[in-house]
Image 1 (cartoon, one colour):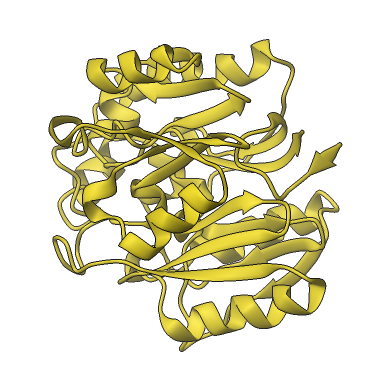
Image 2 (tube, helix red, strand yellow; image 1 turned 135 degrees about the vertical axis):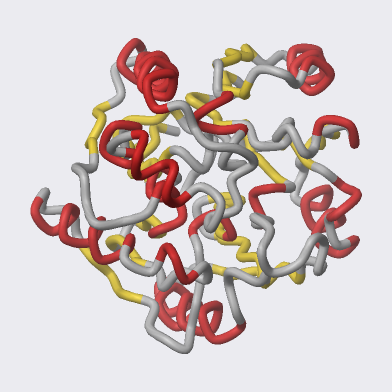
Length: 290
């Protein structure tokens, strides 16, 4: 069965924003990286090679890739998950909580409409939400983080679109952590890898949400503290228990393999580490097969 309401099924269709379309050139990178809070400037030519290798994982398994073209957006547009939520009823386009990213949802909406992808709705100001704060726990349950990027009005609008369709929307209150300038989403602390398996960082997870996951039958694989900042918890399921993780997280990788996951490491110094966006951030899955 194909559905948009999964984080773990085999990816059938996915939207990607290639590095050349997002970064464009070294001059753009040099002009923007500090304001966007990147750790250091991306090396443009190296990012192209990293992204080509990243795309190969989807091509090899036969996923249909819809590549976003260049647009008048920031470097952050490479992290295309944040612009939208894919549902079985159509796309929901976000209003970004990070001001520099405000043009991105319009660009992806125009792209989706051109491709004939159905649209369910648009989150409007003063509501804000970002795709990294939304995580399908199962086909009928969406968890959404209340963060500096996703506010209560944004959550209310998401609920108004999905609850009439029979979708349960769970609000997850997340902590201040490093404050408004940091990239801290719900999916910074949970990555579902199968219907009953998730990589988590419990240290920043509300007790009620962690207990809800256990009640729903999830086995939790803990990301170690020393690998949280290197995105050891940001793991993308290509298919059930087959996942992508950025290189440099050996403990997380070992723990995933111990529970039966096929783990593929990719080189992401330029496309992931410097902008603090892992494989889930780099992808907007549309449909998965479960």
